[in-house]
Amino acid sequence: MGKNENKNKYSIIVPTYNERLNIALIVYLIFKHLRDVDFEVIIVDDGSPDGTQDIVIQLQKVYGQDRILLRPRPKKLGLGTAYIHGLKHASGNFVVIMDADLSHHPKYLPSFIKKQLETGASIVTGTRYVKGGGVHGWNLMRKLTSRGANVLAQTLLWPGVSDLTGSFRLYKKSVLEDVISSCVSKGYVFQMEMIVRASRKGYHIEEVDLHFCIAMVCGCI
Image 1 (cartoon, one colour):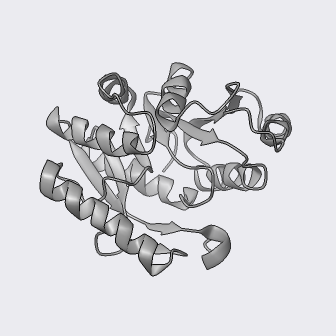
Image 2 (cartoon, rainbow, N blue to C red):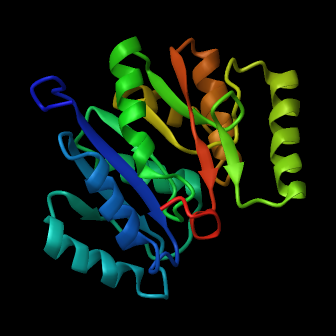
């Protein structure tokens, strides 16, 4: 996919807290897999005491401050507000939200972009619970808890997507601004509320199967 084929710009929001050991690798992998795409990485660090911000500053020297944006906050203020904070600094017309702990592999980003271009979807969300998806590196209890939460939410909320608790998603920026302004949650329930509200608002949602991976455990790098 070349820039002539896709005029969009993607703002990738990555909240961090004590991710000194992971942030350089995830940034490297983003650049590796999005070579022909116009994008910026917005790192929202919540006052990590481990030197995460020092690493990000070094990354800015390598990739440029226009490609790596450090937008820190003084302390941990919640995942939902981290996305809101990052969104304020996003210049792209599409926004990707993903975790910094390498459980969301950047190799899936082209699939998210391709799916959106093919379907015109307002949201593309990664799912672990369709054929082709899965979870690696979790013990059985954690898998059952996650799957059970999704089944319960599906039964009660009928959102029309298979993975409500996943947090690897691509949004049209205008859609994310609309949905995020409606949400009241601030913690990890925020992701579930986001997708349910988007579904209730009638936004077009597509899914991409992916493997959620504890990278250092299962060798996903």
